[in-house]
Length: 200
Image (cartoon, rainbow, N blue to C red; front, side):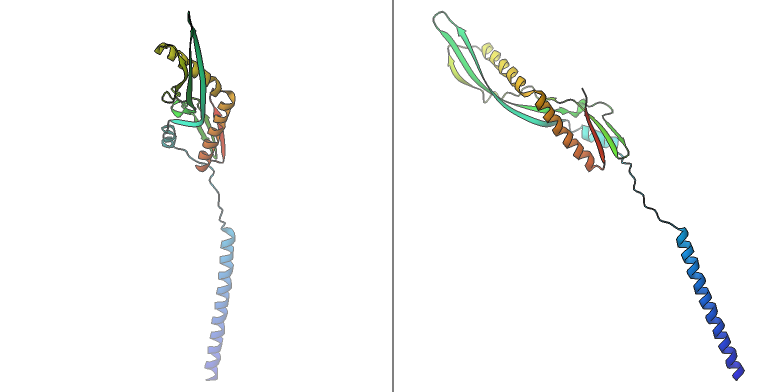
């Protein structure tokens, strides 16, 4: 009986040693595998802008970046034999500066990685009929004036407004507003570097 118990004890001891060796071997194998396996995370910096997106931006058409309200007092005198006729009129107008993206060149957007270069059309007057004729009124009128006389005064008022509205300062201001709006739009699309230019 003592021999049987002694054998059972040796078998248990051998099994315990085998289990310990197996566990130690498994730990070494797992740690070696983990050392050889590495996980890397890379961010993809390439941002694609599709032709459909370009077409949808271009399809918006006219963009207004600056609105200029102006009023001009125009007077004219016609000398007569016994008296002079006098006409004074006040004209009101709103000039809208911007551009139409239909005027943009074929390759107006160029994307490369996280950078996009945008070439916008030049700033211009969006509507040439900017005088509000419903608000135009005669300030002083004496004598008879024809439709041709009034048309001549209208053209003079228009020229005065254009001279006051289409200044280099106002055009630069409209360009700055356009730059800010397009820069924000393309940054929202994921581009880190946005280069804005205006074509001549």
